[in-house]
Image 1 (cartoon, rainbow, N blue to C red):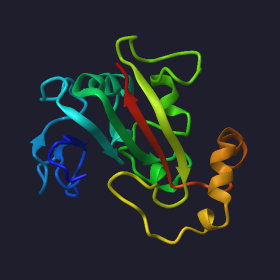
Image 2 (image 1 turned 90 degrees about the vertical axis):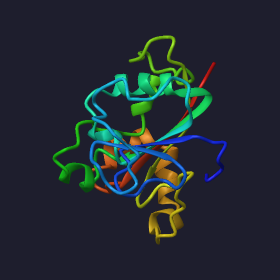
Image 3 (image 1 turned 180 degrees about the vertical axis):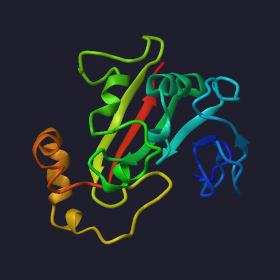
Image 4 (image 1 turned 30 degrees about the horizontal axis):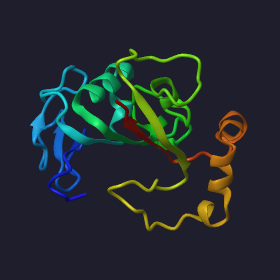
Length: 191
């Protein structure tokens, strides 16, 4: 991802910004390029500036998810990607942090995409995204910027695959018994 032609916005990057990305955060920390309250939209960038927007455990802290997705639509070039990693709503990490504002499960992004028949959309028709991937992870989800090498017995035993194959059943009946760690989404801006 260090290709200089690909422009990445790391939203809520904190002090661990993705290499080569533009980092925006509420706090002035090492690596943060732009200090801005992310709940104050629009963000201080020109339209159609980015090829990828990354949220690594930051989107759950924002107040208005439809406005955030609409802002991503404004900032992304056509074909650009939104990559989201967030704590699953059943995760102890989600429930421990009092600054989390938004619960996220495997179907949370279905409200913002056109290729999943979900009945209702929370963004205007001008905001067009396609869901490329979503998954539940019991350790760290694989992303474009991190490839977890942490031991994950749930993946080795096939449990993680089974959970993602039957994610609705899992979230409805089992997620509080066997709580996951993260949920991952990859969205693509359509023309």
